[in-house]
Length: 255
Image 1 (cartoon, one colour):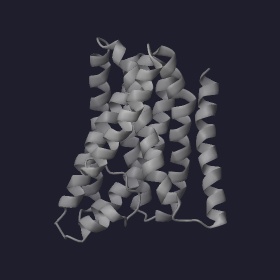
Image 2 (cartoon, rainbow, N blue to C red):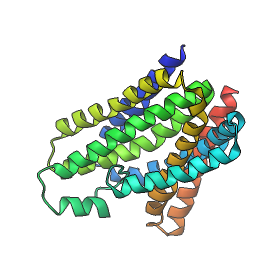
Image 3 (cartoon, one colour):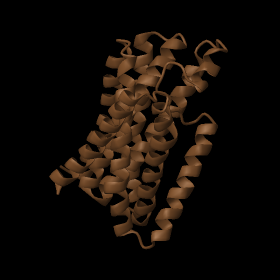
Image 4 (cartoon, rainbow, N blue to C red):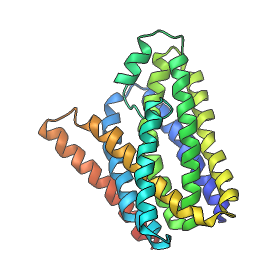
């Protein structure tokens, strides 16, 4: 299978299939499943960063300082983007951002803002998937798995926001599928662009690492702290460990 085909398949899986899986959960009102998905996603994201992406980035980079500086700048960038409401990863029907939006009764404009941010996010994810595949096919597969792991709970949150904003189930699904196609566009664009800019790949891998660290630590983990009871904590630790083990297992299998 060619690298371009791998990128397209991984982008479709990361985008469209994540939307389908999220729709099945959101439309059946299985909100109790979302915390389980989030805990697993945290493990998959951190596992991909520290077991696969960063080791490979350090291996092919000309400077360690370049990688660490890019990670630092990337985390700051994603913080600013989230502040500007261009990047939303709320995974519940009610959170501070969504409560503020829904309180305004804006006839669906808050839902559309979520879609604009999600489309940008998906486009960037496509670029990161392409950069990983161009560096190494195994790294691309691991990166795609990590992205899919956090896309599903994110898309569940998006569906719940759209439904709460007054969109029909059919229209919400169509909007999310359309938004998810931006991941394929980003992946194909990056494939052709990065062929002439191979020296950008280490920095893009570092940016991918920054994105995953930010999503896991700043967005997902704080939500897990809302359930401090010991049983919930043990479940979260177990699911995070399973997420890490999944990435390790896929990497070992591909080796």
